[in-house]
Length: 151
Image 1 (cartoon, rainbow, N blue to C red):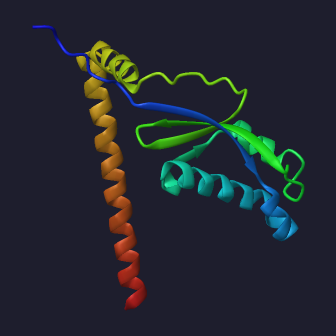
Image 2 (cartoon, helix red, strand yellow):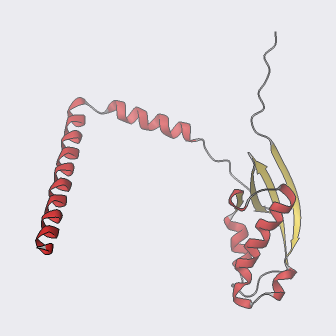
C-alpha cells in the first residue's frame, strides 16, 4: 500500500483593497486606532476570524501611522493569509520570511545542557539553594516586622 501524505497546513491567500473612508467620520485623534479596528473587522467579515486571531504586520501598522494618527490613508491594499485559523495581514508587496520552528531551538538547548559537567550542575544547584535560603530569610524578616508593627 502507498502511504498517504498528510496535509501540512491549509493555506488561503487573498488580496484586497480596504477602503478607510469611514474614518473621516470619527474624531481626528482616534483615526489610526480606528483603522486597526476596521482591518480586524474586515478580516472577521471575510474569514470569520476573531479579533485575537488577526495578526497585523508591522509594515501595515507603519503605513497607517506614517502621516500621524490624524491623517490616515483613504485606502490600503493588503494581502490576507489564513494559516491554522489565524489571519495574517500584510501589505500587498511585502515580502515575508518564514519563521523557523521552535523544535530546532529546543534541540540546541538540550545539547548545551548535556555538555554541562557534573561539577557545573552541582555548583548551579548550590546557587539555587542559596537563593532559596535568602528568600526564606527575607520572608521571615518581613513577618517579624509585621508582628512588631501590630503589637
